[in-house]
Amino acid sequence: MSTLSARVAPARILVWPAIGLSFVLVLAGAGIIAPAAPLLAVLALAAVLAAPMRVTALAVLAVSLIADNPGERPMSGLWRSPVAGIGDLLYLNLHAHTHIEALRFSLLELLVSLLVVIVLVRKMSKDPLDDPDGQGVLPNPLKMAFVVFFLAIVGLEVLGLARGGDFRNSLWQLRQLFWLPALGLLFGHAFRSSRARTALLRTLMVAAAARASLGIYFYFARVRPGALQVDYVTTHSDSILAVVAMLIAVAAFVERRTLGHLLLNLGLQPLLILGLVVNNRRIALVALAAGIATLLLIGPAALRRGLARSLIVILPLAGLYVAAGWNSHAAVFGPVHTLRSISSSEDDSTKTRDIENFNLIQTLKEHPLLGSGFGHEYHEQVQGDRVDQFFAQYRYIAHNSVLWLLSLSGWIGFSLVWTVFLVMAFVARLAYSRARALPDRVTAFGALAAVLCFVIQAWGDMGLQSWMGTLTLTSLTGAAGALFTAQNQEETLA
Image 1 (cartoon, rainbow, N blue to C red):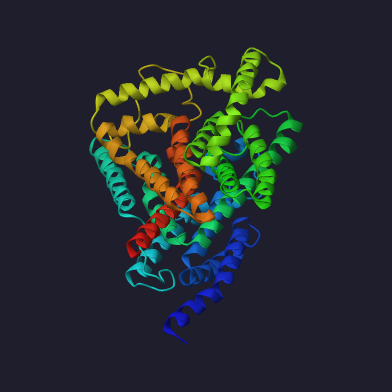
Image 2: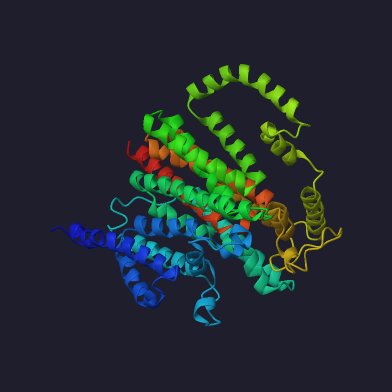
């Protein structure tokens, strides 16, 4: 047996045990076999050390996306779903489980750290298990953007502490941002083949369907029978995952119009649309519209020609529909009501956001170039609705994450941080234009859609503090970055 075969064979043997142990750990998180969790954790670690990264990274991603994040109060805090225990295990700091005060980090962060270390060790040792062809992982522009992003985040943390910022609250502010480059590196290494990218796309759609199903059940089985008043059912972050999954399914059909892709959309889209409706997040519709517009703009030429012909008929009818329903309360004009609520400044929520945005802009004026750094509150020159009796720390993180980051980092710091999203979009667009295989084209478009959805959610509602958004974004952009690197190397060899 060759050296390569000898090294790969044990890992292949351990693929299914790794998956099985991940399932067992899920049961442990649900409290079903909790006493055996420490031993199973050791066994799972042994499997992770030997299994291909595409298996372990995909397992961590899938469980993290499907599980409830307790920090976001899923189901409006009124119902613990079957995956709530798994979410507690993953997302709560380990000191909550072990009562060791020093463990102020979550199991998810520990797993990501472990997997990144494995990636770096295998890369430096040129381990054929994960690097059989010696290809690079991420393109240089994306790697440099990650480096600049990370240094900017660390620099803003040091600046904030030097100016008297609160350390504990600063960690809360930058937690997901801190892990973004590491996740991009991890997923870029894990999803570097078309096979792995296909598995990623399927995982994202399955996770979105699972999350939507939980929300739909909660709404029709708990909210409506009990006449409960809720603002949302799953979480705010579910909007990103659901819309990205919808756009992935649409892109698959647009790229290859087969019966299988048609059935995929017929089965998935109604479920996800209903999930969005009961979740009641208007920003999701904005993200969906932006994603569809992007697909129409960069998609196949035949799609654009068909759209141009269709618009001749659709636009006049759509205009009449909107005009007729703008001031109507009839149920048939529900989409118009949603459109009007998005553009309206009459409701209390919009007025509160306007006041908050004004305060963020005024805070920026105090330190316009570098900002105050992390660990500081924004200053309320105009007092909106009082929420400090429910949430005393609300001034540390604003709803509009973009203006909030700008107010803390200033124009220079913001530019250094925000560059990574521009580079992600640029790399995904180029990868899409050069891709030929279906999984590659859909992955590249999915990465572009994920950037759009993430940024829109950041503008609309605390998107920069979303684990689900960060995981969705980095998994697709990491995969698109690996694809772009492979494309460059193929062109060089040609």
